[in-house]
Each structure stands twice: as structure tokens, then as C-alpha cells.
Image 1: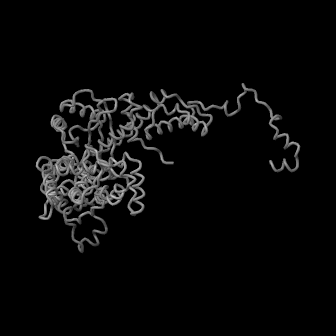
Image 2: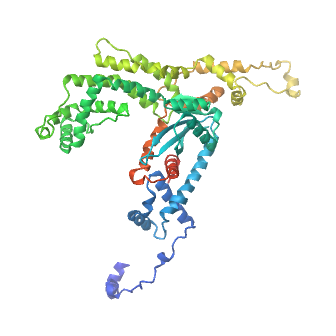
Image 3: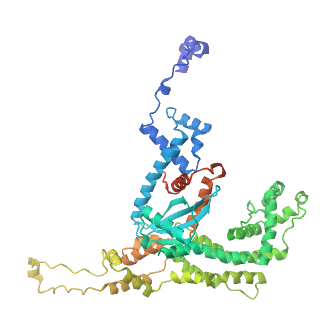
Length: 536
């Protein structure tokens, strides 16, 4: 159109380009798209409002983001007719409504569970408010391991065993979880054990916590602590010196080493000390080159690289702690069952805790401290989860009709045919074919023993495979054992699921949002973990 006007109507085209000749819109006259604002009750407006609620909950954004200039400009550009509700609307109505919808969905999902296992732990926010976080785990009908964060509630009372027990019972009542079949997975604190005892709950102690206790003892040995202190001084220097960090990148490129930053340990996590030493050994040639550089030595007169004996000790320390690091990583998985791994993993760790004659004194002492792990928690935990064939059969006997009902839909023995009236076929071939012999029905005890025997004779599953996938394909072959598998494979071997929520909650209850009420903290943590964003 513009080309046509310029070619055949040059006068009119020049008039159109003249800003002075364009019609002037009065300031009080609104254009069409400004008049046609979306009504808050319209489907389009409600969908946009819900999307903003999703954005706040899943991305851990503050409620005040709806008042930010950049956010309002973006929404206005996408949909000029939409009017963004106020911050209080999202705080008091939109987010709570989304919380109620998601909670109802989670409750419906929990109602289909054969058994629910929970992990729980306490943490303190930046506003010095004590919270209890509870997560739930179960195996679905499709043999998927489902996990939810149920609640993050403020607990002002003393964290005694009795108060913890009452907290758990109230939680179970609110979510409709059977208290008599509830399984608790917690750390090894005495108040947690007392709460489980008072509530008559099955209690599983966190195996990762047991590993942490053993490793912390090893890291507190004088020779190990001195070595960690020397490595820590070097890594801290590189973290605070921009010059050293820049020269380190140059040396990494020159020596063809991975461009990794040095790590510094945290006192509360033993594996951070392992990671610090392992990363230092990886970058040790580059670190030595940097510390010998005149450009860096000007500001680091008191920083020296490790001696040859220290480097050798660090290598031995990493070798001694490597099995514990692998065990901790394995037990911290959330997508696969971990309770069944405890017994073989524990036995393998004990087999690794042997010293050789060529080991240096520090390595022997580290291994000795790690080997003390079973004395209190490890042995009992391994024995609890190492059941023999007789134990499994006894479990069937105790569970009684419930498990038999679960396996009755797929009988292991041929069913007795119904008696039919004589037919023409019977009259013709009755003398040739003998009558069908009836099979004597087997007792429940015999059927259970046969099923367990077949299961034990089946090939072992590769370590890289998910046991739930195997059960999904074979649950009809072992209907009664499948029922038990759902009851036990849902139990996590550690309480890391609850502890992982702490980092999420720390991002929500930040220094800039320390005035959030406990109710809002509960809603935001719950939605961040459980809210499912629809696929586009």
C-alpha cells in the first residue's frame, strides 16, 4: 500500500507523512483497546491471573513482584487489556486458592496409596521461627515412586518427644493417613525416636545420618583436621583474591586442566571436606604454579602450597572416604527406592574397612573411625532390612487375609472348572476322554512358599535398573510379594527429602522476605514442590 501511494498518489503520500496534518486525538478520548478492558471475571483474565500465581509459587518470587515496574510493563505488552490485581489479592486470595486446589489433588493421590512413609525434620528461618517440614512417599498403582511435601508448619513448643508425637498425629489426621501403618524416617535424634515410640510408629533411622556421624569422627582426627586446615587456607585465599583467581584460570588453560573453581568446606557437611580435598588434588599443579608466581606472591607471603607428604596424605584421605561419599550419594536418591539398598551397602562398606600393611598411620586411623559405624546404628539397621525366606513367609502369615486378597485375583494354581450338564460332545467322546481330574487346592501357606521360592530363584536385577520397573513388569507373577514390595519400597532410607526442603525454604524466607507469616511460608513451600505446571 505504501509503495502504491508513493508511486501513483505522491501528494497524498506526502500529506500522510506530515505530522502536522495528522488528526489530533483529544486527551480525554480513549482509543478502542483502552476502552475494552478485560473484566476480572472473564476467562482470559482469570487464566492470566492464575498464570501469575503459578509464576510466584514455582519460581519463588515475592508477592510484591506484581507491583514491579518491569513486570507490569511486560504483562501490559503481552496483553494491554489485562489489569494486574494488587499484591494483597495474590497474598490473600489467589495463592491460597491455588494451595487449596493443589492440596485436594495431593490428598486424592495419597488416598490411593497402600502405605505412606514420611520424612520430617526441623529447621529455623532467618526470622528465628522454628518450622517442621514433612514429606510423604508411596508407590503408585503404576509402580512409580511418588513424593510430596505435605506441610511446613511453625512449631513454637519445645521439641520434646511428646510434642513431636502430637504434631505427627495431627498431621496424619489432617491428611487422612492411617496412623497405625505410618512409617517415620528421621535422623538419629533421641526426641525423634521417642516420638515414634510414643505414637507406636514404625521408625527407620536415616542411614545418611549414620554415615555422617562416622565420617565426622574421621575428619576430627588431629592429623586429618590439620591437613584440612592447610587446604582450607589455600582455597579461602583463592576465593578472596581476584588476582589469584585470574592467574589460576590462565594456569588451568596452560596445563589443560578443567576450569573448575576451588571449593571450601562447610563444618556441618562432611562431604564438603571430601569435595574440597578432591578438587584441590585435581587442580594441584595449577595451584602450585599460581602460588609460585611473583604476581601472586606479593599479596600471599603466608600462603604456601602443600608439601609432598601432605599431598600424599590428601590422596590417601580421598581414597579412604570415597566409598562413604558414594554410599551417601546413593542413599540420597529420591527417584528410586533406597531402603532395600541399606543391607548390601552396609555389608560392602564393612568389607572395605580393612587396612593394609602399606597404609600410612592417618589412613589406618580414618578407616578405624569409619569402621565404628555399626556399633550403634548400622548393625541394627542392616539386620532390620535383611529378611530371610522364613521372615517373608512369616510376614504373610501376620498380614493374613489382606495379602491373600491381594493375590487372589491371579491364582497360582489352575482353577477348578465348573460342572456343566451333559452335552452331545460328551455323549460322543465321553468314553474316549476320561473325566477331568480335579486339582486339590493348595493351602495359603504352600502357595506363599512357592511364590517366595520362585522369586528367590529369579535372576538378580542389574544395579543400574530401577526395581520398581521390574515389579511393574512382574507383579502378576508374584501378586502377594508385590503387595509387600509396595509396603516397603516406598520407605526412604534417609531423611534427605525433608532436609532438601530447607534450601528451598531458605530461598523463600530470605532476608528481604523475613516478614512472611508461617501460613504463607507453608503455602509457598507446598506449592513450589507439589504444583504441576501444565505442559504447553
